[in-house]
Image 1 (tube, rainbow, N blue to C red):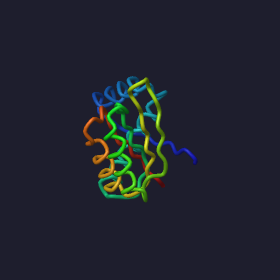
Image 2: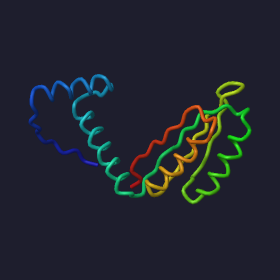
Image 3: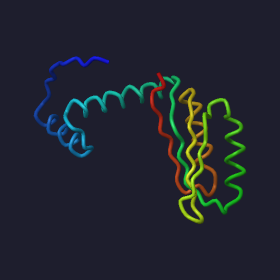
Image 4: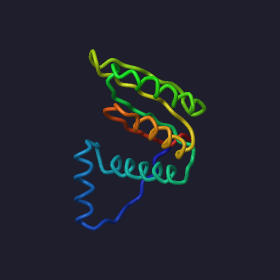
Length: 133
């Protein structure tokens, strides 16, 4: 993809905020920071428009709580049309990390993530979505 150069006029305070954002997030330059902000805005708009997006649901839980696994798998089977893959990792002897790769309508992925994250015993959960096109 070719790069097009253009100029942007910003108030001095806003430019300082952009520079801080770029520095805090370790972007090499303002262009990368602006690109990130624009992409983020486009992706979030697609979520709200209920477009097809791709993403991952990250779950952290204690595997010794047996109901978590049964409930999680039941929910995942109910949403099998949007689940691409699931990976399970052992972080230590008790705590597991599960990453569920998903692709589908934003509202469907949000519902799936909410159902999984709300299972009693899930220590942490998060849905990350990005554009799929």
